[in-house]
Length: 183
Ligand SMILES: Cc1cc2nc3c(=O)[nH]c(=O)nc-3n(C[C@H](O)[C@H](O)[C@H](O)COP(=O)(O)O)c2cc1C
Image (cartoon, rainbow, N blue to C red; front, side, top):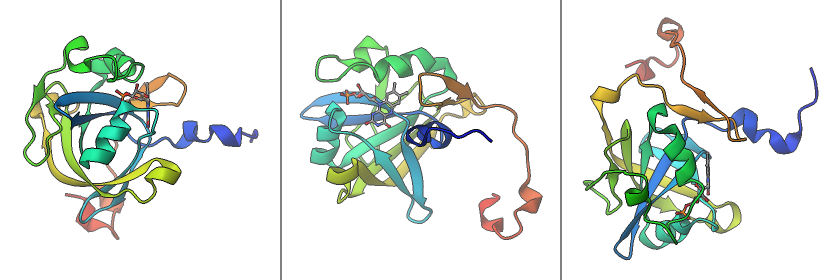
């Protein structure tokens, strides 16, 4: 083994697909890119999201307590990176990047029609937002577009390079202790 820089371990662990986070604040919709997120609890479904004060979305999330986590497929790859390299303070990102908003059911933040999935979320704990920029979100409603099912999502390697989902292997028959998660 070769030693790996400890301040770069996020490149090994940064979890899950890169997502877009939408908010709606003072009559304006916005969207940002987020790589730092994790599932925290199954029931009710809780998601940890790191959204920093450098983001315009941070203020929107803190003030409104609502957002949508939208999961793009790799077809949107370049837009996803560009959305994370400009701010809603100066740019109408829905117009600039040709994203189609659609009303959500439980929150004011919009869904993004071009994305494979949209998860409507409410902030349930922001006690670690000041210290770690960590918001605990409860998923209150979710949507998927069956037409995009199976399309690869993007996974950030932490340095501007991305891997795409590859081959799926099915090991469900070995999930003997966790049968409830096989459906
Ligand atoms: C691939 C990628 C991943 C990112 N992940 C995060 C993240 O997890 N948390 C965060 O606060 N910002 C993250 N960013 C940066 C924000 O998307 C960026 O600051 C964006 O401009 C914020 O937009 P806003 O000011 O309109 O909210 C990421 C950017 C990119 C390109």
